[in-house]
Length: 351
Image (cartoon, rainbow, N blue to C red; front, side):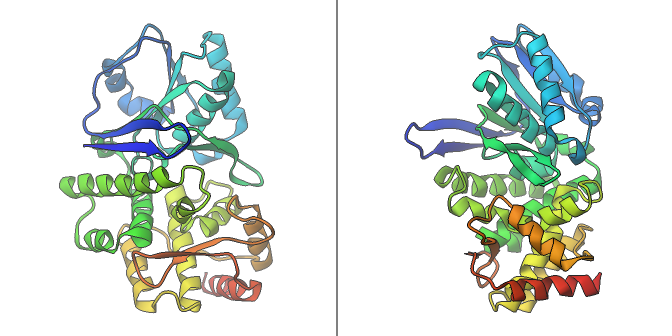
């Protein structure tokens, strides 16, 4: 299956997302593969058997969200300079969302931009992070606050890579799938509820629909000036959770699951979502052992951290919420501080 990306810009750019067994990849230029020790130990030999290029550099960076930093990106750039890569050279991101974000960012700034390809190996990166061209790194101020929009030349999604994925990592990807369904497609949400998302055919259908939904959004709004912001459902709250816990307690998808539950509580309080539908979403997340609770120790500090979010502007916090039922959405930047803090206090008491 191929999902096309057709960016509606002044100069149309095109690339394909290929969902199938990894094909042979032949490049007539220098190639550097960026990965981590975990992915390399499982899949390095398989990729190198299918990859042909005049020169191949293998660059490994530490595994984990806490290493998604400028220092790590500078290390990647150093390796490219040492290998005398030029503007025709290519980077391949071979791993999960952290690898994809850092590799894409490195590609966007090396000699003002070289090509890169995404080969995502986690469910989260296959259904979300590898699609759409968002790249970046974290800082002590927050998540992905330094980065760029930089599109890959192609994305190759091979579901077979998921066979070695630990259950926790797999569940983290489910969170991003649920996000897409809640925001855009009630029928897809019904499918997620009624099928085992670890079964082979269900996995293929889940990936294909998630990628298609995201591609539709990115094709219309590459730079997140409108519709694409909806993809951040669960992230406004989730990014604060990640920052408060040092990017080490929760996987990104786990923090998004917590963030969706928080966003849903806000939507229920505003009368946008019924308690019944909020519980349907919670139960689907909990079926895959995703966390749905979080104890906020300092409500004032949690609230203040919202203003560091990239989606907030002009002193207003932008909240992405279900818009009346599952499958619909609304963006609100007019919520009273008191209302938001009432929801945050609920999580402070519940733990």
